[in-house]
Amino acid sequence: MEDTGAGQDDGERNMMRRRRAIALMVAFAALGACATPPEATRSDVGALADAIAALGPEVDPREAQRAAEIAFAYPRALAREWQVTDAPLVHNAKVLHGLREKGLCNDWTEAMLARLRQEDFRTLSLHWASSPPKGFRVVHHSAVISAAGASMRDGIVLDPWRGGGQLFWARPDDDTRYDWGPPL
Image 1 (cartoon, rainbow, N blue to C red):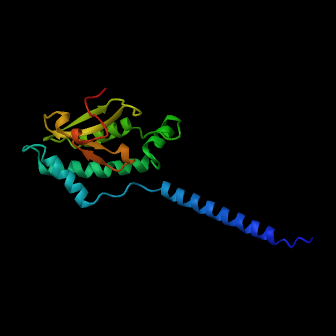
Image 2: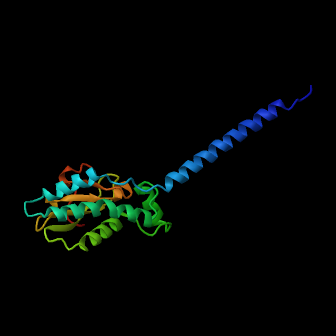
Image 3: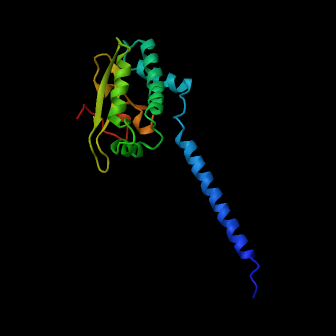
């Protein structure tokens, strides 16, 4: 029986197809890893600004607008600086293993509060909020903005950690994922 080599050619072609498919998947994964969170739209920023302004009649709408702009833009810059390219828990593992310098929830909270404090808001207060460990979740921290003198509970959670730099915001009691309270 003579071997024509046709089976070997099919096997080599299949191997080449598999290699190309793997190379494409690696390329797409690499490109996706370089992506930054999507830019906020004017309506995203406007909705947060309106919500901040609605925290109380004494809140200056210009301060609310500035806070909303920073709350969306600054985390995107941090995500690039901190090389956040993965889901939050994966990035946390990289930080804990020394592969990344920053990006834990407390890093986001500290940076967000420091940046917002630079504005020296007169009609807004800033708070550090924590959510205790629950089930499989570990303690979580986030910034909260409120009307001047109001409690953290009466404010708005500004949490860029859970979106890897893409801002999540909600009233503390409306955030179904975490039970926000004072720092632990």
